[in-house]
Amino acid sequence: MSEADDIRETALPLEFDDHLDPLMQRIGDARCVLIGEASHGTHEYYAWRAALTRRLIEEKGFSFVAVEGDWPDTWQVHTSVTGKEEAPADPKDALDAYRRWPTWMWANHETLNFCRWLRDHNTSAAETPVGFYGLDVYSLWESMRAIITHLREHRPDLVDQAVAAYRCFEPFGEDPQAYAARIVPEDCEVEVMALLTRMRRFVGADPEGDLNARQNAEVAADAERYYRAMILGGPQAWNIRDTHMADTLDRLLDHHGPGSKAVVWAHNSHVGDARATSMETAGMINLGQLARERHGRDRVVVVGLTGGAGEVIAAPRWGAPMETMNVPRALSGTLEDVFDRSTVEHGLFIFTDRPDASFLNAIYGHRAIGVVYDPTRDHHNYVRTRLADRYDALFWFHRTSPVEPLHPEAASQDELETLPSGV
Image (cartoon, rainbow, N blue to C red; front, side, top):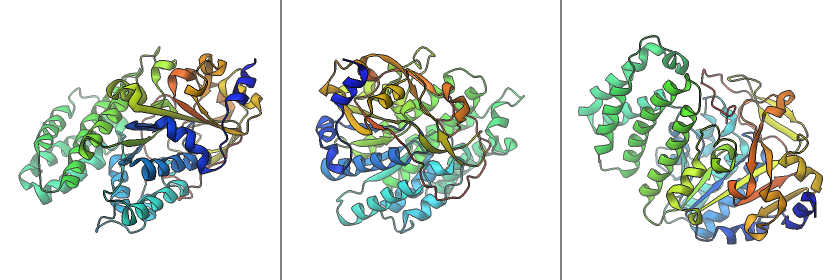
């Protein structure tokens, strides 16, 4: 039997929400469900990830959604969807305020539709509001300012220390490249770590506000390390970033209590176990690997999403305005090519149903499109992968379409590019 035959025989239908029933059964009592995407700009990935998440919240009582996004920006969305008095009544106002490039990654109509649903769910049905948080590490300056704002209201005795730490970064003008490439060997690590130590000990009267302040301190400390490591090249910066994501996930689980359960939204490159890919050979770890190691493979379900030709929102270079780009047909012999040749239009694959299927156990190049993409160099966008070990389930879409951004253009920011390219 050919690989294409195996795919056709294994594919489950994927047309309506109730077609997710077999996956809901596979998820069972898992504590963490990590849901990926093969790009940051494809409608089908965002829409079906949201559909699965709605069911996990409604039917299995998942406690929060944690996304590959900056903590301070996403915190504003969290306050909106959980109905905080000071927060926007419409999550669109919080998402519309996203200004860090790439804005389209979360400031899009697909995310907005989910967040509006989540706010309605929280205000009408949820005894305990379901949160929406950011896992990423980029927001060094934004997090430092958030700490100072919090301390001015709750702990004015610590403000001077926070301001001193912030001023250490002022000469670099909120430019990560300037900080990472500084000529002077001294850095701001001592100041930031001292502040983090104080924030970790801080306990106030507002658990939510304290969580926000402490996490911003964690972001500042790890971002400082990340930007220093980024300029050196190699896997260290990537590993700092994904370890930060895993640590943040654990802090959120602790915050929500021993029975809490998490949904994670991030690129396949973060959620799919790195040990099943060529990332391991390069010395890289990732969030999916760490989640399985820390919580046990039976408590973590990883769902990959991928597709064939179509269109995607991305940018031609780091910081450039977004574009609608054509995604070419996959390279011959890659995972997406094999799925294309199976003639399955869209389908759900649950690996425990057919663990011996040839396409699960072979090694293929698996496409990964980041926020930076050049269709003419698509051959650089494949990660060698063994599906059976990387994910527990997979969504496939033969034809893909772009997300619908809230902003007509992205604001340019001088960020440093991560590896693989911008994921």
